[in-house]
Amino acid sequence: MVNRNIKRINVKVGKQIAIGTYAFPLTPLEKKRYGSMTHRWSCILRSPTNENMTHNIKKVQFDLDPSFNNPKRVVTSMPYEVTEVGWGEFYIVVKIFFVDDSIEPIKLQHFLVLNASENPTAPSTVAINETFDEIVFNEPSSWFYKQLMYSTTDILPPHKYQEHFCDHAAKEKEAICRYICCQSYFQNETYRLLAEASEISRQIQYLQERAQGNKNPAIPSMDDTRGNKTPNNVKGAQCVTPTNKFGTGQISADHSEATSAEPLHERSPRQSPRKQAPEHGMLLGGGSTLTANGSIDGNMDDKSDDKEFVDCVESM
Image 1 (cartoon, rainbow, N blue to C red):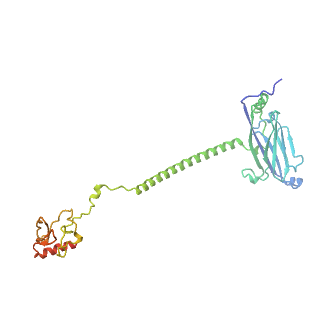
Image 2 (image 1 turned 180 degrees about the vertical axis):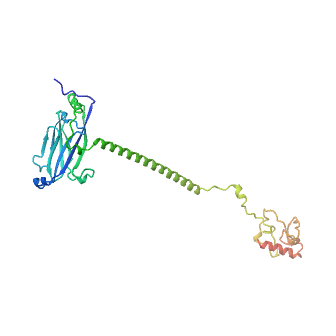
Image 3 (image 1 turned 180 degrees about the horizontal axis):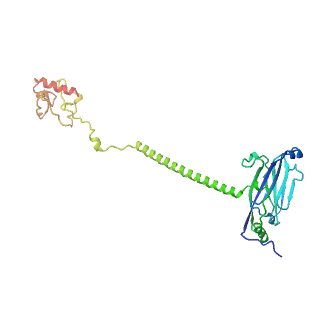
């Protein structure tokens, strides 16, 4: 006796399935027969490769809308389908039972579509709605594993609605191509945005460096400032020797300081040459001398020279 509880460790087997509804408008004769009904439709559970699914599926239960007579329809052989007439759309619950009773049944929901306009690619005479799925069996028992493998070699003849069945393999390839194209597009967009961000960062850095340079201008060197110095020793700009402004023996307070540190300027040809000051006095214009006690000693006749000297002092 074969022990059915022995499992295939680390083994996975996947079986693809398709659930579809196919709705056809009623003919005028059928409309007279069924009254308010508008469509004849079928709900089918099938294999995309037309495998004989009876090797691994025990039965299929279709739960219809409660308004139908006998809403729970059980089908034990292929084709797993139910056909009805109606006027409304609703969800159909498809419950699949397997030949291995240790495997729990699975439930799938599928929406019945009657309006062909919702599927523009389908012919106007039929409304098609299909869903594609895959059932994965993890570590099946040895005997059930043999059943799964045997079903792949048992191929059935085409279904009567075969021309309305969708090619899910082609759809899958198309979806993969769209995914690759989208991935390539987003990758290129990412590279472009990164390049723009890098350029903006470079411009920001340049502007920051430029703003920092405006805040801290370069300090001019000493060589640059020497040529801009304003000379103080303009010829005839000032008189060095203080004088008695009014000839009263009192020296003006505005010129009480000693001679400037600047060198003496060249005298005008109109001025008489300077004489060396005596030991106890200060030489004044016209050859006069200011003594220590404040009196003026010397020749006072040369008024023109004194006047010129005084004018020079007043111009300071």
